[in-house]
Length: 71
Image (cartoon, rainbow, N blue to C red):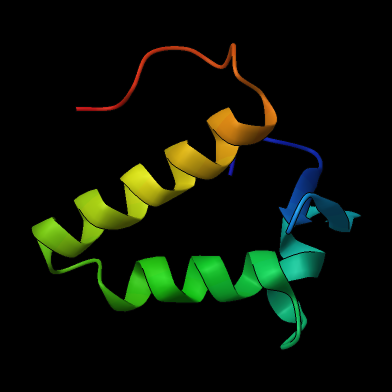
């Protein structure tokens, strides 16, 4: 993962902010759950695309100038 910290937002509120590895090691972590869900579908291209689109939607709702929509 190419970042020092991750900010997770749920329902418009700060859910967690920490180093990615620390967050992934916590069972109750929202970010950790997203990563687990992503990897559980990693062999399924359509599931990966859906997850990518959902993450893009979440990101752009919070930061509307994030960049172009993924393919």
